[in-house]
Image 1 (tube, one colour):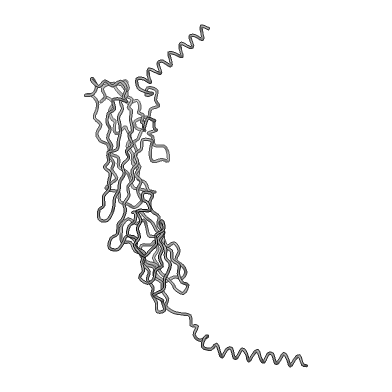
Image 2 (cartoon, rainbow, N blue to C red; image 1 turned 90 degrees about the vertical axis):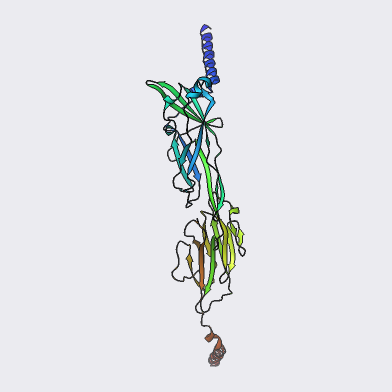
Length: 366
């Protein structure tokens, strides 16, 4: 019984000490910490490949001391001794697969533990301060969204052999701890800020993208219509409302269709930058065709057969792109001889059949 009482008293003391630690600084004293060199603030910019991001590739962040979430901090004695953390920047690299990434280790931001007044847990609130963008210049509407997430970074400053040292760091988002390390095969950590940048191209004098039909040849019917469709693939940053087509074509979702005759066009007056496209045509077998312009492979000579899924050269990042489909008919099948001689051929056929009938009848009489 005595042993049981001792065990119970021991458990009470352990729980009491844990409660005190929790009351003083949450769960920080027993938290899993990360090395400052491994903990990284990351940036993920969603942007279509091919768009020039040189003017929007640098992002800024503020680090504001957070006394409420610090442990062992004395506002009266320590306020004037805290280091000032300057605004920080992250620059993203070249976009790939619709994203551009960047990161900065916390060891590049907090470089000297001895700058703090004494051992303790020092907290900082981290926010993005990059300016949002929503402007239209030279017919291009540019939009950059900014991540409003707030993180709390806690630095663990302890007494080392030769003075104060950083023994670790934790990062928290909305009351939950996140892993600030970048895992193998990944580009971002749990300490991540996300932005979206898009450009929408507006009409210039040539339109953003124009598909033109040309009918040529000595025997071509220039009043004939050819069904043509253009199927778009827009970047993830865009929406269908970013697509507009001029009158004369029917737009159903991301596909524009029209029956085009000579000099007819499908003209897109608004497209998100980074859009790719395919052109299809239902062609008359009597015509040959060739295609030129902003396509992956231009025709140097006329070819036979229907045009199916002719691909654009690359993602559209500027206005004035054109594709021309030329349908050609230089000759006709010489059917006139057969039609003019048909009555005589019929008389010959009747005569042959008559002679055959008489020969069969004479043989039967024998």
